[in-house]
Each structure stands twice: as C-alpha cells, then as structure tokens.
Length: 384
Ligand SMILES: Nc1ncnc2c1ncn2[C@@H]1O[C@H](COP(=O)(O)OP(=O)(O)OP(=O)(O)O)[C@@H](O)[C@H]1O
Ligand SMILES: [Mg+2]
Image (tube, rainbow, N blue to C red; front, side, top):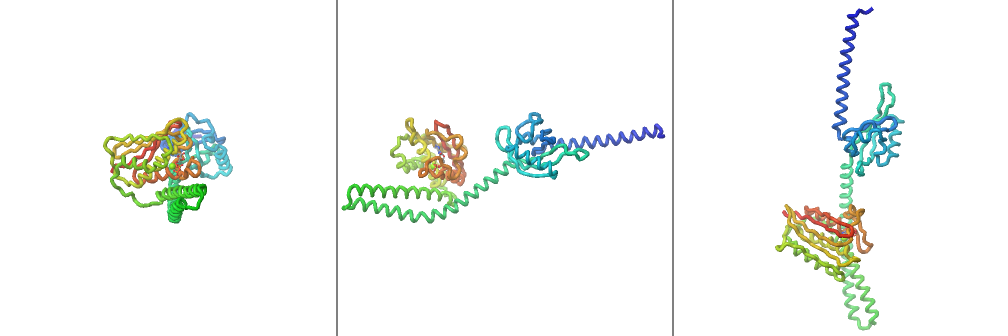
C-alpha cells in the first residue's frame, strides 16, 4: 500500500501537471480570443443545426450586427441566398473534408458583401461532429476592382472597334451629305418640276441631310472615345466657351421656350485645359439639359450656368429645371449605351464620353438631381 507520503507526492505531481495544462489551456484560449478579436475575416461557429454560437469582431463588421444580437439565429439567414448556403453546409457535413467557395452575405444595411468562405468541421474529443467553423474573407473591394477592370477593358475594346468603324463610315457620310447638298440646289433650280414634286423632293433631301448630320454626330462622339491622344492644353476663357456652345446648339433651341441664364462673375474665368475636349463635354451636357426641358408640360424651361473658382480647380455647373433623374436610373446614367430616350434621339453615349474626357483632363463630373425639380451637372477642371 502506498504511504501517505507517496500519495502526497503523486498528488503534487498531478496538481503540477494540472496547472501546466491549465496554463496551456489559458494560452490556447487567449490565442483563439486574439484571433477572433483581431482578424479582419468573419469567423463564426455554429452547432450541427447551423445555429450561430459565436461571431468574431470581423464578422460583426462584415454583417453589421453585434455578436450578441444574432447569436442563436441560423447563420444561413445572413446569406443572400439562404437555401444555397444551407445546401453547401449540408454537403460539407456529409463529406467531411474542408471546403471553400464564394458566397454573398447581406449586411444589416442591405448591401451585399462577397466572401470567400472556408468551412472546417468542429469535433469533440471522440471525433463526434459538434458543428461547423467558417472563415470568411471579405472580397467585395477585390470583386469591385475586378469588375472595374473588366469595364475599362471593355471600354478600350469599344474604343478600338469604334475607331475602325468611324474611319470606314466618315468618308461615305461626307460624300452623301455633299451629294444631298447639290441635289437640293438642283431641285430648287429645276424648271420642269411641279411645285408639289419640288416640295416632296426638298423634304426628302432635307431628311437625308438631317440623318447624315446625326450619323456624323454619333461618329464624332465615338471618336472622343477612341482618341488616345493626350489633352492639348491652351488658355480657355470659360465664359466665352459656354456662350459659344449655346450658339452652336442654337438649332436645337430654335423652337423651344427656354431661358438661358449665365450666372458669371464680372471678370471672365480662364483655365488651362483642352478646349476641344471641354467643348464636347459642354455640348453633351447642354444637349441633355435641352432634352430634359423639352416637352415640359408646366411652363418655361430654364438652363443656368455657373462658374466658380475653387481650391486648385474651377467648377462649371449646368442646371436645368427638367423632370430630374429617377432614383433607379441614377447609378446607370454613366453606363455606356444607357438611355431613357426613344431610339433615334438618344444613344446613351453622351455621359460616358463626358466622364471619359473629364478623367483625361484630370477632373471629374458629378450630379445632383431631384425628381420634379431638375438636375445639376458639375464638372471640376484642375486649374494647374
Ligand atoms: N439633365 C438631365 N435631366 C434628366 N435626365 C438626364 C439628364 N442628363 C442625362 N439624363 C439621363 O441620362 C441618360 C443618359 O444620358 P446620355 O447623355 O449618356 O445619353 P442620351 O442623352 O440618352 O443619348 P446621347 O447623349 O448618346 O444622345 C439619358 O437618357 C437621361 O435619361
Ligand atoms: Mg446625351
């Protein structure tokens, strides 16, 4: 029989071992705690039914909820597509090996967070399945960057195609409009044509000229895209350029009841920029404003220009009292070929071209709009 002394020694040994394990356990716990608190990734643990047991600080950021708010809920309900998430978890539990997939989650404020998800099985000491641990990396910015690059690539491709088409089409267009011009003169001078025939022929020739002018306007717009040359900066008098733009667009304004307001400083504001490019932006923005106030059912249309000098830039604001831009259209208006106008009137090239040019000029373009009140587009041009 072991003596009391031996028992005492054994007890001491056991107690030493216990405190060693306790220290190790404490360290492991702290280690896990610090991962859960400091990792940017969302780390969650669920039981076998998918009920959320714990959520890391990163998870609170990804989902927008505090951990205590949502522990006890099913993790699947935070996925954009809960059924799909449940299916993936079930498949993982059946097969047992770690899995990795991409899954969108819904943040508390409604926006989507794209995550790269890895699932690991949570087992007890007997190897029994106790639940799942998920590690989810927020890939939203990466995805947005990827989409942006695809868009830029697509724009560059369109630019290249456009350059080819414009090159092929411009010459025939010039020939058509020249011949239409001669025909018009010949019809006017023709002695043996009846008045009715003359009228009909003149109308047809005018139609040809108008449609050719439209085609040339579109090819000119596309050139703005494909032109790769760097901006040629000269001293530009902005007051003068805006007045010139209105003169240029006079045919569009001819039969419309529009008030043009120049809200300028007494001394004209100058800026060093590419005049041709800026002119193209102004023509597009003013054309849009004219379209917006055309068919205004209640009263007079109004387009107002304002030029302001800011810190390191000059701002030109173009405001109209048109119908404004609908909420659902606002994020699309700079997309290539987005238009709400009937075919033959709009192609959806104007604003993406303006944005492209303003980028080339080192500036930017923004807008404010209110349905039923009107829209203001602002362009910021760097002053140096
Ligand atoms: N001032 C504005 N007021 C209301 N809506 C506008 C205004 N400017 C732009 N929009 C909206 O944005 C859309 C896109 O404009 P954008 O200039 O790119 O193309 P578009 O005018 O339709 O065609 P394009 O300019 O190629 O002739 C328009 O169809 C219109 O719905
Ligand atoms: Mg337009």
